[in-house]
Length: 207
Image (tube, rainbow, N blue to C red; front, side, top):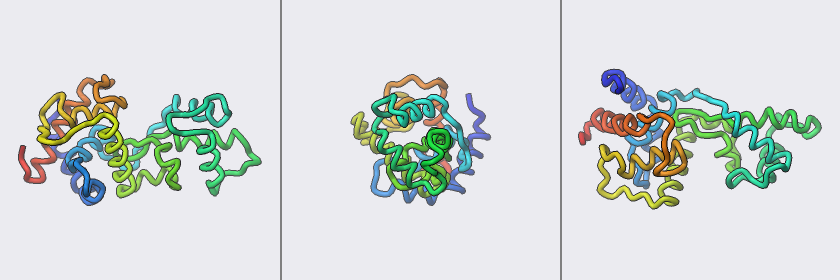
């Protein structure tokens, strides 16, 4: 179980640092502020500079660049090549070695919600832009909206404590890619739901 006092302090910190960026990102969407705040708490402790390299992602992206894989999700070899050629620090003369180094950024998860760098590959941005709160949370909302559309997640009359409600499903989507996925940390979803409620309490919204 979590330490309630520590959790309240964490949610207060996230509210102080990110409430404006979160509020701007969710405008016009059904995703509440407290969900993004809880997501940031669970993924990084709300640390904007948090990063983590995912070796298997790097391996797969390098295989894609070397034409040993047809695609990586929706990413094609041409997408990687275009992104690399647009990079001011990349020289084609250096070849695959430098490309692999550049792709470390794509295979790194960035920022409060730990968004993978390759998520901005087609947006004309650099992965480390995901450390900027406005860009980061806007991208998170786009990804969450894609999950809600793909899996038909309905937020109408949603209750935070529901262990298999829409918010629980969305937490599992973020962590596993599937609303019924099994999270590595069995407390990932319960902690997320608790943090949502704590954030609502801080905002004076109650249950």
